Amino acid sequence: MNYRFIKASLLSVALSTGMASAAPHQVTVTADLEQQGPVINKDIYGQFAEHLGRGIYEGLWVGPDSSIPNTKGFRNDVIDALKEMSVPLVRWPGGCFADEYHWRDGIGAKNERPVKVNTHWGGVEETNAVGTHEFFDLAELLGAEVYINGNLGSGSVQEMAEWMEYMTSDKNSTLANLRRENGREDPWDIKYFGIGNESWGCGGHMEPDYYVDLYRQYATFLKTPPGKKPLLVGSGGHTEDTQWTDVLSKNIERNMDGISYHFYTLPTSEWETKGHATEFGKDMWFATLERTYRMDEYLQNNIAILDKNDPEGELGFYVDEWGTWYDAEEDREPGFLYQQNTLRDAVVTAINLNLFHKYAERVHMTNIAQMVNVLQAMILTDGPDMLKTPTYHVYDMYSVFQDATAIPVELDTSDYTMDDKALPAVTGSLAKSKDGSTYLALVNLDPENVAAITLDLEGDSNKTLKGEILTAKNITDKNTFEQKDVVAPKPFETKASNFQLPAKSIVVVKVN
Image 1 (cartoon, rainbow, N blue to C red):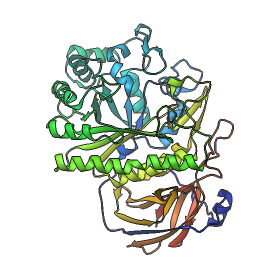
Image 2 (cartoon, rainbow, N blue to C red):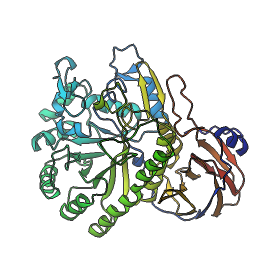
Image 3 (cartoon, rainbow, N blue to C red):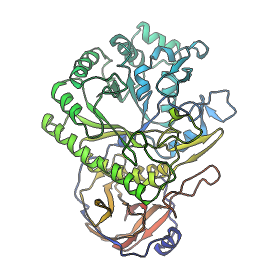
């Protein structure tokens, strides 16, 4: 992220964002800048690209013959925007789609690839135009590593083992030579490989004890040359369920590096009627943030189980699906999961990234759902046009935390309340980046009241804060194809140890 260091007074920020005049929240940020916590793994900023709706086709892939400027079939405008926000990792091909994906359908001449039906997402034709080679092309264009999700649900041990050989073998085997015939001489590197997805649901409706035996069997035959073995991921639980984490961490003693976990933010907490993406009031704003903040408790509970069953800390906890999920928009295919993205989504993002930083000792990787045109997307497209969502801007602002070293921080804050429920008014993160700079992120959850911030940072003698702020006039503000910068970062600077954080805002600053 390139900060635009233009002098901007806090007064101008207050006026432009409609800062409330009520009594501010009192927040004290205390830390010793010389202390060190865990490294915030860059893969916490991972993305997710499933064969779903317009996520792959149109959103990313338009084909080499398209009038939309592209490289190897992937549209240049989207690739350039994703590179700007430093995407470290992409998960593919699903999601639920992964457990009906057969990799041989996606290799070889495109006009000879079978056309299938995507039974999970809209019942549309799946042309298999984007397969293994194309996905690795995408990753290379982005400069990202890959997380491949294997088919446990409808596949076989042999199919999964042969896919691994096809991708990673450096020998003169039939499969390795087939890869070479299809245009790739050298084997690829795979960072993570998932054995199944949501095995409790769309991946097979299994019990964890049954899945454990299947996992052991499949993992046994995933063989690679020395130095090519990916981190293997077990299909874990979701929401408040900790059973999968417990059973997997107790009973899989080898060939598993981490356990996946899924949690989606629904304003109503009800799948039948989730809530509207852009039409909501302060009650649904609070309900959404209250739901998303449950991630704190769910992470604590699962990590406590891992600490008991894996005291050496060898297993990672991978939140490889998370984000907001709203009701389908009218006049759109419900199975495409397209939704708009407002300032509310930006605040949800910042809350969760701060929590992932907090638990970085175990949380080594996450994947927001999803990258383009699906659920809480970074980018939305409309034919040849595209826009960056508020969520995109949070990822861009927070990119300084990738592989940074967390600094333990105590954040003493008043509550943001509604009815009988309470949330911390402000959450935050503090870390030292790879270049030695210290960065502070703060998010004010309250849509009406400012937060009075007091910094108590030992080891810091200057206390100049310079960076960017993301906020907007209204809680429902969004970026559209007609107005693309309604919710976009603006410069933020203060030299004081005491300053005001506007309502419904996110700040990332360099501490000089």
